[in-house]
Image 1 (cartoon, rainbow, N blue to C red):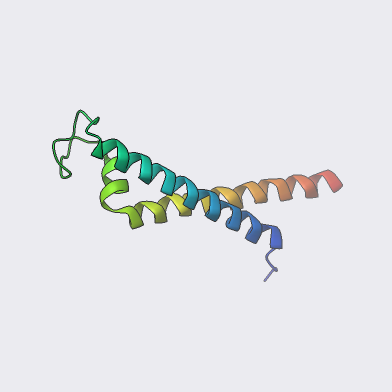
Image 2: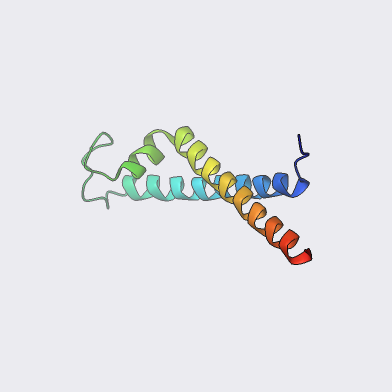
Length: 92
């Protein structure tokens, strides 16, 4: 079994930080937007005509943060993999 290159951990860590920050910024924005009654679809917090992402972000914040952070971790690892393969191909 091949040893995992340390850059993959760095890519995952950067994805974790960026994903967590973006999810929290979006949650704050969604909560403020919904609480300020600018959402024309929202009568109360259980209104189902609101966009599903807003419902998840405001009513299930931990689940929303988990999925957004996981997506950014995966993107970070994929970016590192692409850069690592380009570096290997360049040296061949």
